[in-house]
Structure formats: C-alpha cells, structure tokens
Amino acid sequence: MRMTGIKYVIEHYPAVIAILGTLSGLVSVLLGAIISANGNKIKQKELQLTEQQFISDKKHQISKEKYQKLFKERIEVYKQIFIELKKLSKNLRVVGNALYRVDQFGCDRTEVITTEKVNVKTLQTLFKLIEDNSFLISEKTLELVKGLEDFYWKYRAETDSLYDVGAIGPDDIDDAIESDHKKFYEEQVNRIKEFYIQIEQEISSMKKDMGFN
Image (cartoon, rainbow, N blue to C red; front, side):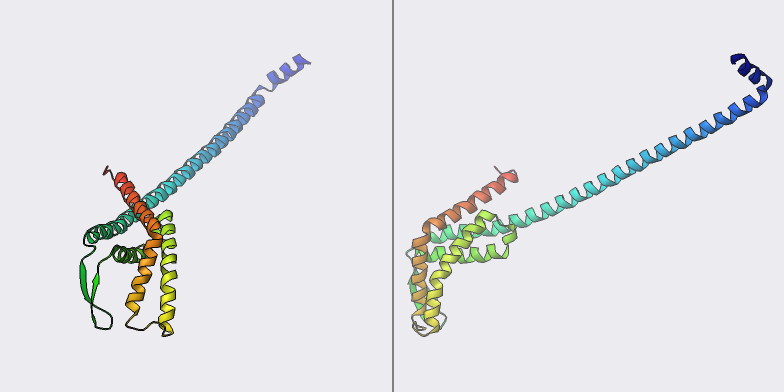
C-alpha cells in the first residue's frame, strides 16, 4: 500500500510538484492575509488609544485652565473680603468717637460710633460680596453667612413691618434700626466671630497654596 503511494508519486511527479506549489502559494496568501488583518487591527487599536489619550489630555488641559481661572477669581474675591476686614479692624479703633452725618430725610444727626455699628456695616458689605460670588465661596462660609443673614433679617423684618403700618415714624426709624443692629450683634457675637475666623483661615490656606507661608 505504501509502495503503491510512492509509485504513484514517482509516476505523477510533475503533477504532484504542481499541486504542492499551488498549495504553498495558497498558504502564503492566507498567511499574508492573516498577518495583514492582524496588523490592521493592531494599527487601529494604536490609533484608537492615541485618540483616547489625545481626548484625555485635552480634557485635562481644559480642566486645568478652568481651575486656574476660577482660582484667580477666588483670590480676587477673598482679597476684597480681606480689605473689608482690614477696614473693620481700623474702624474698631475709633469706637466711642462722635460721627456727624445727614440722614435720609436731610436732617443733621450726631451719633456715637459703636462696636455693633461698625460690625454690622462690615457684615452688610460682606453679605453682598459673598452673595454675588457664592460659586467661589466655601460651603462652610456660605453656611455661616446664611445663618447670620437669617437672624439679621429676623430683627429688621419686625421694624420694617411697624414702619409700614405707621407704628414707627420717619423720625424714629433710624433709632429703631440701630436698636435692631444692637440686638443682632449682642445675640450673634459668637457666630460673627466664628465667621471672621473662618474667613481668616481660608485666606491663610490660600496663601499656603500660593507658596506664601
């Protein structure tokens, strides 16, 4: 049986060689196609990874630029807050002095500068400044401000209501508001101090972030 196979090969040698050549070529083509397909897949994968890396780098760059912009804006806001606190410190040094001014009705008034007046005036400025830039302010500070504002308007609402119904006249409104400020400051002095300390801590932290130890 084995000799018959060898004999066949010998007798048909040219045809066998031709068949083997054809098969060899076919195998080469198939191998080439497989290698080419795998190569294309690898190239596509490389391109995909490169594109993903590019997108990731671009997002990181945009995020970094946005962060830097917001950080600069935050610094400007806290600089304004710091200036108001410096004014507060300066104004507290003249507590007890007389202040001459013209009220909303054009009348001359003389009043004594008090601790509560100086603090309430500063707080009113800071409330507005923080409200206008709440996106750049820490949650802790916003929480303290909200609590203080709620108490402040609690006192003012009662006085405003009495003024609206005529229970308080134009000549007495300034004194009534001054009384509200005094009650607000005396009852909320600890919360006010906590607010100031919180601001100072945040400014100190920002200085460290900028390398100003």
